[in-house]
Length: 350
Ligand SMILES: [Fe+2]
Picture 1 (cartoon, protein in one colour):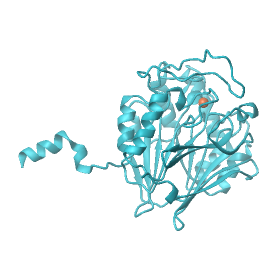
Picture 2 (picture 1 turned 180 degrees about the vertical axis):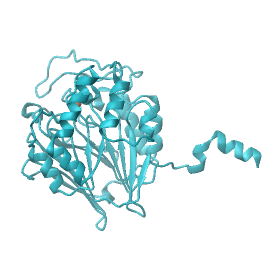
Picture 3 (picture 1 turned 30 degrees about the vertical axis):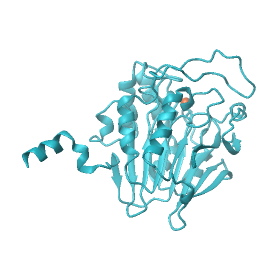
Picture 4 (picture 1 turned 60 degrees about the horizontal axis):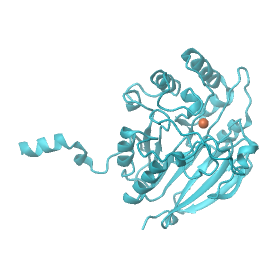
């Protein structure tokens, strides 16, 4: 008996082989709104896209990064910019009406296209967690980086949301030296150095366990796009061996009913990558108030339908009875920019 207890003490994961999300809630959810790239201005209180989000009556709103344009190593300035967002009527309306989850991208982390060498990342993490009211006993206060996961619901209606940190551990990206190809931004090129990381060792180990948590719908929240890489902007394709590692983990653990959501690029699009027979989707909503037409015109061979450069907010609707999803993006009048239905049965690994 003593030997058995010692064995469990050494290998605690055996107590619950499948693991669990960092935080769990019992309530069933059906609507998840999300958005990214909001540049606030003091005393500016009206951005219709926030009202569109609230009118959808989502169970959750996920801020997917570039939630402010901090771009500073002066933490007083960073706090001041968060305060501008906090004072915005539209933001307050979201907080009042729905549960808010958040991760960061480069600008709210503190530096444009920034990674692990940002000198104020420890301080910035604390300010981020305080602004989004992270509970004091949360694991996010205890470890490096802001990655985390949530499970909502039970009994065949579990939604797991994995929010990644694509900044805290990321190595320097190689700037593109190639001649600019038509339809590209050509800022970065994929690295061939397989020692370079996007997520870092601890986050990878955690992520692999998270992909084994039982879930009926699993959403990977990545600030940067996962599938589209041809534009030469920041994306998972800058570190192709890590993107392949993620795809391989999905296959290895048969993480059915999984798709990604992303932001960062200042326009909206839906991308699809076939991993064998599994269609992996990445729904990008970016430009809560900062859309960019020129970037929306950049190439993406994985795009499903059209890109849109209106201000936009993402919406995921789950129909538990029909076992289906709708991947949507709405524009500033609540107009439909993207609306793609997916049956759960389509999202099954062999
Ligand atoms: Fe960004």
